[in-house]
Amino acid sequence: MTDDKDVLRDVWFGRIPTCFTLYQDEITEREAEPYYLLLPRVSYLTLVTDKVKKHFQKVMRQEDISEMWFEYEGTPLKWHYPIGLLFDLLASSSALPWNITVHFKSFPEKDLLHCPSKDAVEAHFMSCVKEADALKHKSQVINEMQKKDHKQLWMGLQNDRFDQFWAINRKLMEYPAEENGFRYIPFKIYQTETEKWRGEKIERKGDTCSTAPLLVKLETGQTVD
Amino acid sequence: MEEDEFFGEKAFQHYCAEFIKHSQQIGDGWEWRTSKDCSDGYMCKTHFQIKNATMESGSRTSAHIQTCLPMEETIELPLDDSEVTQTTAATEVIRYEYHVLYSPSYQVPVLYFRASFLDGRPVALKDIWEGVHECYKTRLLQAPWDTVTQQEHPILGQPFFVLHPCKTSEFMAPALKHSQKINRDVNYITSWLSVVGPVVGLSLPLSYASAGSRDE
Image (cartoon, each protein chain N blue to C red):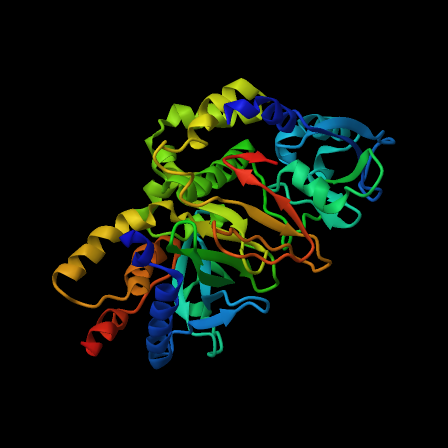
């Protein structure tokens, strides 16, 4: 893995130029200008949009503001999917910047998970890492790490620190020399069909999987390739 | 690897089928559902709880959650005002859904659940936690994010709360070892659900425990 450092860096530092526009029916005291941001592909919406929230809340009254959520062309954006994945699934064939609509009302309870704080993003992220390690190492590597290592992995992602993140993640990407690889390779397949829900399936090494129109997002360890 | 065969998906489906058989005998409401495009299936149950919020004249409130009303019966609320001269009671009916799915990553069953009021409004997690039995509360409150989180249901794609499965094989291991020692057939699902269910307001009638041993 260390031989591919350039590739790892390119993946980590991937960005999507995005334009955030307030939903037209939100109640504002004056007109809201759109807000532009470069979003990291490997991160999560609710982790990197504090500035978006601050920008729009400046023109709104406190009583008109509840949990912020995002939508693209009518589809509520699942914050628990990595940003790069959302873009590739929904907007990759459209011209840049990616135009996202911001809402502060009518949270779509049936479609989106709530994100009450950054702790929720951390819990989700660590849950994914742990599940991946269950397949790779029977959870041995992740469970042998100390809490501070878990924290460092998370802080590396939250603060966009490649070296800090990979200092820990490289242990999750190693396997003993005598074995030829991981016990199972974890990956998730997201299908771009027109059905309402997107399926996820974690396939194991050696299983056949369908080759219907697919976007394959490889999540070995934590990098989304 | 012996653990790979220990609780595979086939074993999961077998124990669920046995569990549902007994549920049908006692009218406990569990049923099996499959998803349209694959052979994956899960077990589910819906039940209703009444939440009483009683207002004392000194304006203190206390909430009592009564358990388990069968779905088919009409819900009758006490209207006898002569007993409650100094208090007013507001009752809310909450609909709980419990789903038991198999996790191929952890090779264990996982409990998904959600709650809503009758008009469809979802019940917030903190309100669900208030309905958790006292003895489980400390554990939940100390590290809530380790134990119960909101996640997407793997088959339905909708938000559910989930009891995280990463510790399941740990706490199930001693019980299973013991049952192997005394050579008694134990339904994994029954044992597991009797441990995790009460943490989120789901109880199992005791007859489940004796259901399996009749097969010996």
